Image (cartoon, rainbow, N blue to C red):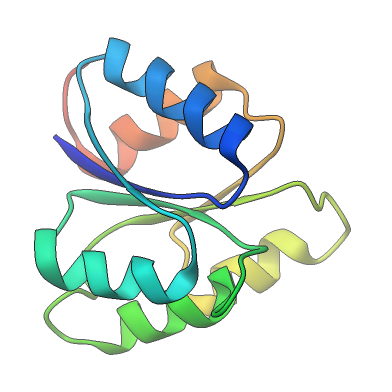
Length: 122
């Protein structure tokens, strides 16, 4: 399964991509929201992990743009954010995220959400 990991923090990106690759996922990286939109169109991923605090185009706008496109609207997006403020989850879901996970990422919870959203066996 192909996952587009959108993360501008190199340490978070490396840690998440390595852990997901060990679980057998094919990981493609984007480092900002503009790249996320471009990569979605190029690779048509099975799922997107979208950091919400991104340079150039933030995760909120990138998610809205991807979900506004009929061709890519079906792709599940899990919003990732270090912001655990009240209302952030709702804001992510309103932007078009199917799920929302706070950082640092709990891999067990994240893998469960990935599985639920893609109905795939791990």
